[in-house]
Image (cartoon, rainbow, N blue to C red):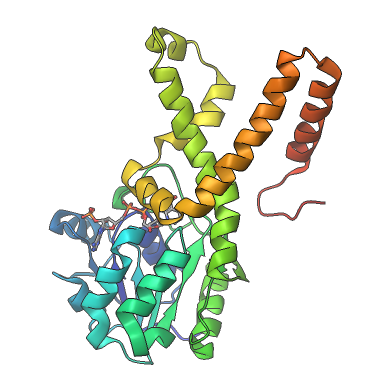
Length: 292
Ligand code: NAP
């Protein structure tokens, strides 16, 4: 693949910064112009070598770019795309990295209208519970799945280019509908984050929480690791995918109630059977591998 002439990076945080570094490392871009909401973030991105040039607006970051990456909170997608719309040409490829896709695709349709063909919605299944450009990591995407949710009007050339680009960054690319994406990730990402936040909230609401927390061990650490994630980002994701998240939450509550009933009834055998099923499934589960 020929290197891109210019990446316009809008949102110089963890995901955007990591993409910029990975692209540079792979020799896939000649110049990176970046913009973030706070000028101090954009300046920091340049100081860290994540971007080459600071832009004072999203529009100026996109000007002259053949690749634009939106790595902003999903709720900012529509306004960001509107702000660059009149620069968008069929030759420009625009991608995002948002964690939800139905709302992002709808925002792109509203903002880009006839230029929607330039947009390739993407969600790399990679990340950290820390945010900000300081945590940018050129290896972040290595080995990760990337889900593309093209619209019926996404240009085939852009879709193919997006696929090749992510593959060159070491990713495994899958395409699915925005709806299937949001339902899948409500199950395996959004609900687990909600539960981790709820777990912390539950402990904190009890008397003596500090003492209790000081005695917690590795099980608690592993279960709640993702509760340290960025609250603003997760507020946006949970609200953007509320229907699927609430459906999964109800599903989870059913499973929890079934286990509670078995505990209440003192039915050790049935309880063990249920736990055995879950334990075996988890023991065989491998990150990114299909279940056998
Ligand atoms: P982050 O580290 O907080 O970075 C977000 C960046 O966007 C910040 O630099 C912020 O600038 C900037 N920003 C916010 N609103 C903006 C706007 N209206 N215009 C321009 N810049 C704006 O967050 P992140 O983790 O990289 O998340 C970015 C996207 O990736 C989100 O859509 C999220 O759903 C998705 N994602 C995240 C993960 C993860 O694990 N973190 C995984 C997969 C996908 P300031 O610094 O000035 O506030």
